[in-house]
Length: 149
Image (cartoon, rainbow, N blue to C red; front, side, top):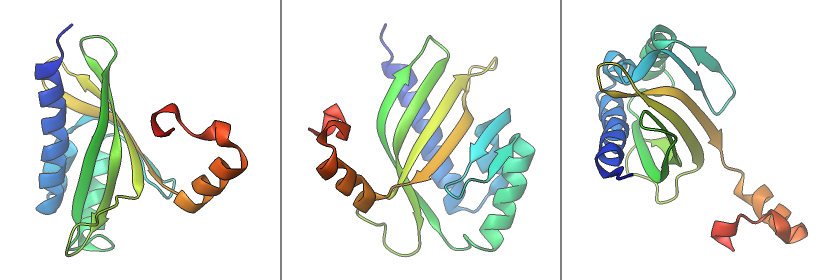
């Protein structure tokens, strides 16, 4: 199955997410999610539904994340049937110059909805703990993922 066009469309959703964040446009940001999407932040806060995601980001864009930009690097896109994709990558928010190393591991579950558009059905964000990871790899080398051996 050739997924090139779908990979492009899925990647475009992530690019649109970054652009909506740049504009601090909570409505445009929320439109990229399904109506019943879930959103888990790196501090563990769990939001359910587009309205919850929009309202939380409206607040974040005017307070804690005011003036920030979003960086996102897609590492892998996997399709599970014609209308479901899981995207993994790295991301982070920043002010000024974009950081060279992104520190948040991110997972997006995406679905193609009835209108043909890909949207994010679930998002999970985890802050990487590289020092702890490095120590665990030294102590137990079998923990190193195959892709990093």
